Amino acid sequence: MIEKTLILLKHDSVFRGLIGKIITRFEETGLKIVAIKMVWPDEHLAKNHYFLDAQWAQNVFDKTKAGYEKDNKPFPYKNAMQLGEQIQKWNIQFLSEGPVVAIIIEGPHAIEIVRKMVGSTEPKSSPPGTIRGDFAMIESYAIADKNARVLRNLIHASDSQISAEREIALWFQSNEIHSYKKELDKHF
Ligand code: ADP
Image 1 (cartoon, rainbow, N blue to C red):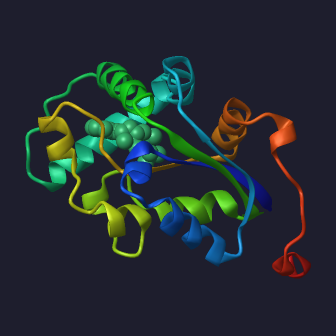
Image 2 (cartoon, rainbow, N blue to C red; image 1 turned 45 degrees about the horizontal axis):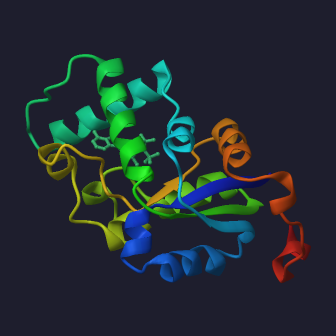
């Protein structure tokens, strides 16, 4: 039940001065920050982070399609892998354009809770109260597509136990991850 998850405050958060506000939200839940650093990713790290496989491409394809359908816009893509490759390319470019803050958050149900706080991939569809909904609501698939770039949605969070383990190993050495007690721990 006690899980670790990786978040990245992407450079749009850093350049907009939102680091403190976003971190505060996680701290206020009682979840624990067990590792934190600023990294300017190179293309190799960015490519490994946004690892392209058939399942990820299909997932991106389905979510993008749903976004277009919601706006009653014709969906121009036919092939999931083709869209996946395009989005991976944009992600590599975006991630390596500036520094990100990489954080490991630990606690009961951390993966699910953090994803819920982050919100939907498309900020326009992300409810108020979520990080993407509160700080990036005016961003949409339509705008990203028009400008041939990624959705600027401020933050990445691991979406499963398997991706959390893979991503943590990618961004942190084991000696950068700390173990300590917080007040709330005695209740878990
Ligand atoms: P999430 O970050 O919500 O887990 P994904 O893993 O599906 O989303 O996608 C990774 C990132 O790729 C997203 O956060 C977003 O920045 C970008 N992205 C996904 N789909 C699109 C799209 N259709 N157009 C532009 N950018 C996209």
